[in-house]
Length: 150
Image 1 (cartoon, rainbow, N blue to C red):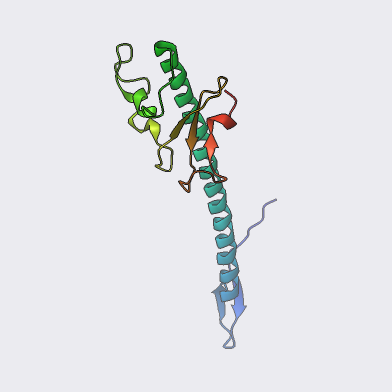
Image 2 (image 1 turned 60 degrees about the vertical axis):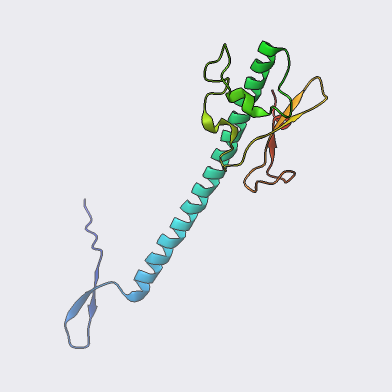
């Protein structure tokens, strides 16, 4: 058993001829549905991009923390606040390209530099901070190594 579905229908005009096609109202309803579906997809993609950036920051903070720990292992101390994170990019005898080899390793996905703070805490002797999308320290979108399990 097969069914044949036609996308158009017949309209009887006042002159007796049949017209086929869609009405303006039907076309507007279809366009509205397509627009709503497109908006839903755009919102989903936007949310996925924000989640992806946050995940990238967490991975980069972990990589920087590991680099700082490796620096401490080889030198016996963590970099000073004045030396900052840039020292991880400088070539040393053991690391020709620096501990962190990527040029952009010290910038977050929004193009802001990661901030480095030396603390007096023996358990966590440093903090690396991402200021988030707004680029301002102390706001709700900040991500820190202190907030992560290391």
